[in-house]
Image (tube, rainbow, N blue to C red; front, top):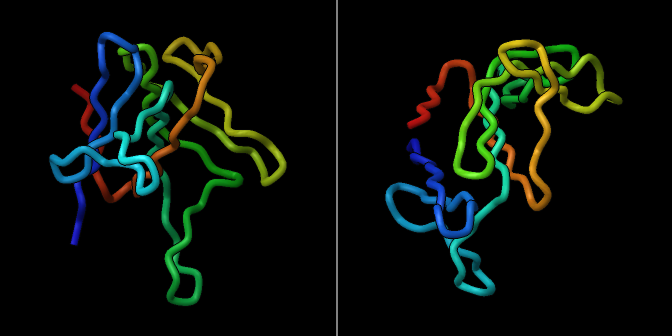
Length: 117
């Protein structure tokens, strides 16, 4: 069963709040709604590794979005090899930096969909 995960920005804090199937996603320990300074959503290939789905990141790239400070930007991503960090660039090929604070990375299969409002 598919679960819809959504993020909405709290304008008073500039943080992205996480929802799952329309219900606030909360911490099991504190009960507080999960939030992030940055949300990185990447469209990724999924390969069959002996019957186990595996996300293919190393040696690949694709499209995605970076959400930070109540704004969203389309990005291209690239991870040349296992040892390299994921590189994020904007439409002009310029590096995209993240705001200080925690970051959530959502990996969405290329067969899935990403909607940004």
